[in-house]
Every structure is written in structure tokens, then in C-alpha cells.
Length: 365
Image (cartoon, rainbow, N blue to C red; front, top):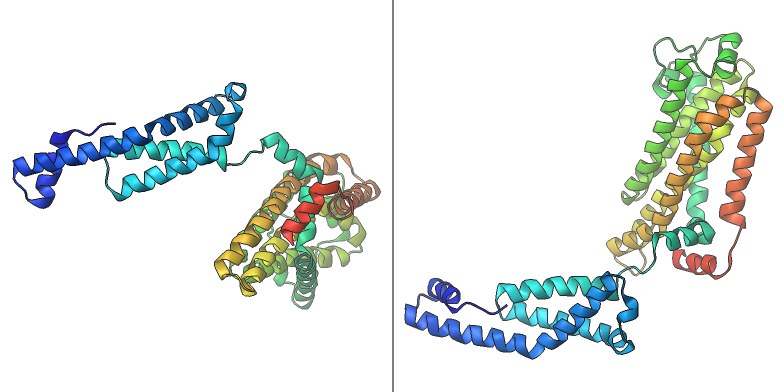
């Protein structure tokens, strides 16, 4: 990592307009200063490099207690050396070496220590539920918006059936339209699980709900307004469907058809919308923090919730693909849907697990 005087001479000549002799002399002084700086600190750099290399290779047993205790101090020494090297414009090789070493050491000293398995155990062992409970009022707001959207969808299509086509995507030849007979609507719910029309519609519902969940969370930074609108718009589709089947006395049957996967899927949308509202509310009322800091803190609190939302959507997709196809009667569909709803409520809101849950709730509050 020593400096080439002739290279420095060319730089000095170009920068300062000196003669070649003066440039060479200045380069030799700069090289001497760089070499002295490196020689004075190089033993500590090499010691840190050796410690980090052993840790990266998983050779923890070969590291002495003295080296482990000295690791934070050695990292700070390298970080200070890097700052000095940059300020004094030392040679690029030294700076590049220090940058790489400081970055590697940072991950050892300050980087995440949890493995994927450890994180998953904490996540499923109470961390997810604690994060959900920390949202508190945001979940109630999201639930109110979803109920409002369902009511709005019902009222719109009841006042003007043409609204149905704007709210519910109807494919070519889809019989689920205003004016359909009871027999036609009944056939769409029972005995024809393998027909393409039903599969396409079920696929649309899952894809739509997954997109709504992601967008409701991602757009929370706009003070939560898009999240609220998405919740209302998405559940307006549900209201329109309920109106259509209610007109033929099939409300109970439709709820059973939807409940198999719907209790999980709608629960996921509820949590995603609450997460977006939480971020928007934090930005609108940041308290003593800046708006960006408040949004960042809210984002960290809701990230674990959204990881759970993705898991719930996967579970809903499995239920939609298999359970609903196997169950061709309203009663068993309702039993499965109710069981899933009770499970999610119990797991996320009732079940606690010791210190992990408590600490997570404290972080999310």
C-alpha cells in the first residue's frame, strides 16, 4: 500500500503547476507521510483483519478473549484511520483497504446477530402478534373503513345496478350479473368447482386482495388517505356481491363460499390497511419527532406486521385452491372459515408468550 512518487509527481504537477523537480520533492514528502501513517497503525489494522477473517470463516474458537474484547476498540481505530486518510488525501490503496476493512468490521460489531431460524422463532413465537396489537386504534379505523366500503357498495348497486359492473369485474359469459336467476347464482357456488369461470374469478379475488394489501401499506406515507380509499373501494366489491346474492336469497350461501379463504384474506387486508394508516397517522401527528423520523419509526413497527400479512395471503391461497374445492356445502365452508377467524384472533390478540411478546409490544407502542 505504499505510494509511487512518480505517480504523485504527475498529480502535483497537474494540480499546482510546479516544475517536475518540485513535484517529485512534494510527492516524496507525501509518500513518506503516507508510509509513516500506515506503519504506525498497520499492526492494529492487521489484528482487526485477522479477527474479522476468523469470524467470517466461522472460526470463533480460535479467537482469544483478548481479541474479542478488543474488537470494538479496533473497529473504532480503523474508522478513525479511514477518516484521517480521507481528510489528508492519502494514497488510494490505503483508503480502499481501510474502507473494506471498516465495512467488514461494522457488520461483525454492529450488524444483525440473529439467524433466519432465530428470527422466525421469535416472529411466530409472539413477535408478530405483539406487533399487530401495537397498532391498536389503527386496526379499528381500518375495520370501520372496510365496513363502510361494504355498505357503500351495497347502497350504490341497490340504487343503480349499473354500479355493479364498475365494482365487480365480470368476464365474458359470467352469469354473476344483476338480473341472474337463483338457479344460475346457485350453480356458481356449488357443484362446478372445476369450471374455468369460477377458477378465473377466484384467481382474480386473490390477486386483487394481494395487490390491495401491498398498496394499502405502501401508500400509507401519503398520510394514510390512499390506504383508507383502497379499503373502502375493495370492500365495495364485497358489498355489491352481497347485494346480488341477497336478492335471490343466497346471502348465507355466498358468505359460506367466501368464508373458507375470505376470513384469512380479509384479515390480511385489514392488517395491511391498518399498517398504512399507522404510518400516515404517525406522519400527520409526529409529536416531538420530525415527519421523516416518525414515518421511519412507524415503518419499522409495521414491517413485521406486513411479513405476517404475506404469510396470511399464502395461507388464504392454499385454502382457496384446495379447501373450497373440496367442500361443496355451506355448513363445512362456514366451519372452516369460522375456525380460521377464531385461530387468527386467538393467535394475534389473545395468545402471549413471555418476555418476547412483552418487549415487542413495548417497541411497537
